[in-house]
Length: 424
Image (cartoon, rainbow, N blue to C red; front, side, top):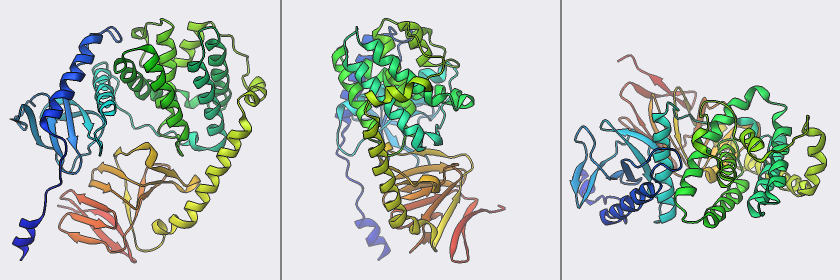
């Protein structure tokens, strides 16, 4: 009976075909070769790995060094280990570094190409000694910070839409809003700057290289601003859009980005110098009155609607992650993979991730529906454990599954569950 059930189980359907992978590899290689180092001084072309999440099937542009991938239908293929996270970025596999691209549910040519170029750029950053970071700037989700950030977004959007004569004025407004916010957090600015350079320059590079004209690139950048503006959480996203836009205006003004210091300084300070902007000694002295021009009252209303949504989520969803039974996972050295639109903050209570993939010392968690609650210090995940099932190292609940490494187990304590490391 068990044998019959196993035989009847269907493998996940894969719409993506090797021929499609070959076309993507050719296109991305052509994009990188066309630039050929003009942007960053080096051709960022390199090995690419497209991965289908449900099946974990790999389509790679070149072989690994350990022979794990096999040539089939003109593409190097294999299966990505189930205990590892599939995410957009540099990944080491079989002794080779690849630019990994998780294939979206529906084929999206522009998205796949830009994700590949972004990951290739991050491999370049790694070669320059800039290591990947998991950025999470909690105070960006606090109401005052969100208001200042939205004002900065609005001013930057106007800067992109304007002609060269008026662009510096809007850019100055954006930097005044930015400075007004940052005057209160001087000790934390270095982390923001790193966020903007690592994630922001990656997005910028993909937009510049993957759009044939400045006008098309500008349209994409404005679309990006609108997307990031609409996100309910800024803690993991604001640095990406801000860094990309400041780099974009610098680039279009003739600034040689190859001179950017990756380990110090800020992109907005380069913009001040490049455009010869004059700023007030204390930005908050003028930012308040300037905010009226950018309809700050509308932003206040947007933020009140956001808080109403948070209160409603707390009422409807919080009990799922606080009332017995729950499974609590303590994080040690986690790697996260998620979509920014799937993030729903609960104010000081933490953040609900509708979908999430996490790898840590204890194994790998995949949340596909129903969500999980991650505390703001990134130390604890809570999952609803109703109808929890165990099968060796595979633990599952409603909408999630956990694959444990061999020296970990789930233990029950007062109707709740937690992980414990075993002695063997």
